[in-house]
Length: 142
Ligand SMILES: [Cu+2]
Image (cartoon, rainbow, N blue to C red; front, side, top):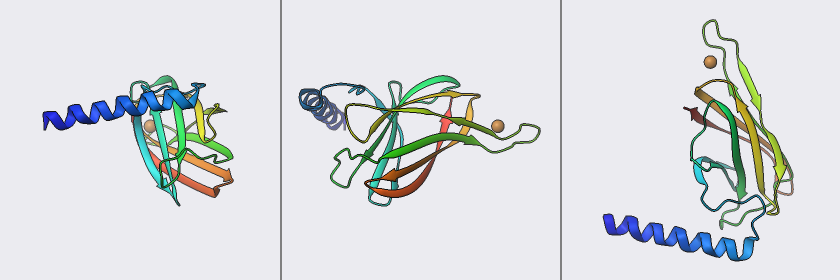
């Protein structure tokens, strides 16, 4: 079991080196950890950050679109917002992320100010070369 973990880490490290060699940086951090990912049509949408977590306050995240082969693909116009439904006396909350493209098509920087810790629904919309789609995933801010 332990050996398997070590092998996995070596594979990740090699993958990171490979990405570094041909990706050219530019908004990519190879040490980013997945917060959550989901499928939309034939795409996998992944939300990541350095810590692998979402927290109350300002967050710098990466939103990536990959195809079935794992290749990052341009999704065109993309939006991301975090939604929390009304709870008791607390009104619903919507925290939109500011998205910027990176040097890698299909990988976006997402900056968002999360109002409170708790359960959020990350809602992603995209419109472009991969068609139009919508996906959502539940994310804990803590
Ligand atoms: Cu709430």
